[in-house]
Picture 1 (cartoon, one colour):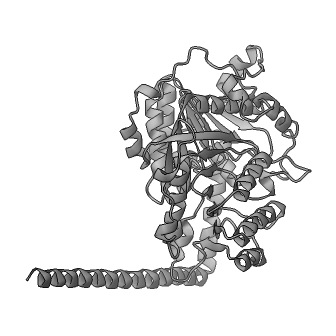
Picture 2 (tube, one colour; picture 1 turned 90 degrees about the horizontal axis):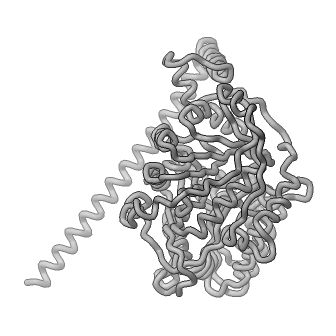
Picture 3 (cartoon, helix red, strand yellow; picture 1 turned 45 degrees about the horizontal axis):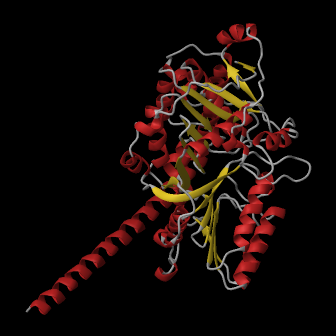
Length: 518
């Protein structure tokens, strides 16, 4: 594989096709979300500006603030948000903070003390528990702020210096959206549902009601609540891939998509749809980056165009299709995110918003390199390299008052040439490559031979440990099996007791009803 500069020229003849092919009821079935009218949206793509908007909204809170994030660090950025939330709690505003235990495991315990002293309700999602060891497999990966049911923020931004920069390194590239209008209250209801799953629920009187929020614009949105095994973004992506006529542009930092999703995208590419996937060249999880690259060949052979962003890290999770539909949120294109986590995304059916997303995508491509197969490299080398200026439409030029999209990205690109603080060689190329190699379905390339040899070495290492120290393997298996059996048994007894109690309540209700009738 080799890299060339991307072609930044948009197709002037592209015609949105999704508007006539996907009715509202189809989107509702795929996403589990209803269409919400009357919203105003603003795209966010720069950490410092985004965090300023969050703080401004929190400062203006009158009734409540719901703050939910996978990562809340004990650093300069985390302490700024802690101070803002503590301040509102002392003013009598209800403040609820929900963080994921795995995502925030490095945040020291003392960081949470000022919250609790000020009356902020703080909950950790799925901390380690002897009673529920399998809870570690399901995470709250959402990134959301809701204020008074009138404004909400959704996207990929976690709370830490990575997203704000530290003076020496530029911030990570991420994308989010600010929502004003009834959909903000729908976001608040999503928070209240997961809040009630892990503790006492929000009181009925304090719950958000989208019907009570005045319209702030004319944009229709779908708030897609990802839950374990619901596969809502999974189905939405397959639906868009099957319906798009012109183009599907995806940005994803941890792209290790399940095979059915890859098949949907490659089928669209074979039909002539312009399918592009933008990934980080320097992944903060090098192993995941290697897993992503392990699937490049199949995508490229089907006609999907792959680009690697050359900055420190691009963390955005977005999709835009046919200049009319787009999605922004926390969901990554991998099985853990699509099938195992709690996520939150917003789907938008709006030409102006989709136009801004496409402009943002082209701006990211200007800092990216395209990955091509060796067979294409010769033909690409013969063509003149083009690095054309971005054409910014009026919609794209108003993302931020007084600053065009092009100007914003000139500033971002000024520091994007720096390499990541450290890089690990791509020792593991996995996924479909390994499966095909073991099954003997195809000849291995150099990068795939690394996958096979590495896997062989690991398997031999496990065999040696089991052969020379069988008691270690035996005790480990016994411990895991015993722990799992006890937990599952206790859970089965608890479920049986709960079912018996429910039957007793129903029978008691029937007896009271019969007596009243007599």
